[in-house]
Length: 298
Image 1 (cartoon, rainbow, N blue to C red):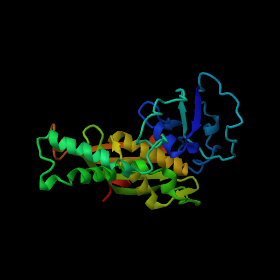
Image 2 (cartoon, rainbow, N blue to C red):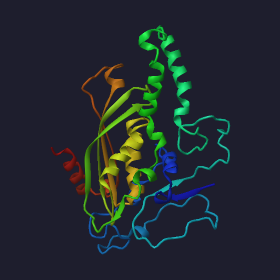
Image 3 (cartoon, one colour):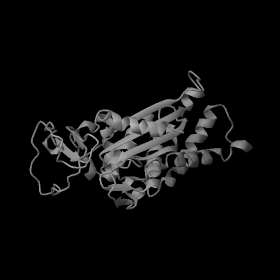
Image 4 (spheres, rainbow, N blue to C red):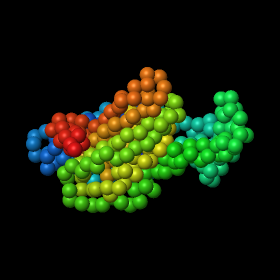
């Protein structure tokens, strides 16, 4: 069944499930020039309004349903997340004892319930390396390593609604907000080794602002998971969009990957820079340049 969902109506778990390289909101549908009408569907500049823009419809019309949310009178431009994928009634995971993604609800009461199994796995790993897991220095290592891994991936236990905790405020402000150099630690999903760096976030409010510390907490949600930097950058940008429905969001992540430093090419000075630009940050060069100048300034 084809479906169209507004990003602002999606829960954090649905958002996490939707974010990938093949199903990502098209930023250009939200974009407007940076002027006094950026948060309005009407325009005095002669250009077409957001409401007048043509968005390709799904192949089949959506059936009418009483469960559909009522239309609102909000004139704030929003990203539209579209997908033609069907939603299976049975995902084949009904017999799982644990699944770490938030969109599945058959998790144990706490992730700590996994510690015994994880510790046994680490003990097998030590033995596979030729070590003696029973020697003094390694007796408690499997349990310590299991607890450390749970901490490194604690973002799986967090969701956007709980982290925001109502810290979205009505404010008559439409100028750029930037928080830069947010420290980030994550785990490479390809090699299970760390990567770390800093994140800079900017957004253009549409009469709603977000508590500044919440931007750092959004970074924590998605970085404390098994990740690739490209996906992490997108997830942060879309989460900010969901939180305050701004006119645009920009995210730049600069990371050092230990899989490149400790192994493989062993290039200790290499850094990876990724960015996601949504809304006016993508389509307005001056807005994008202002953000990048603020991020790069000392």
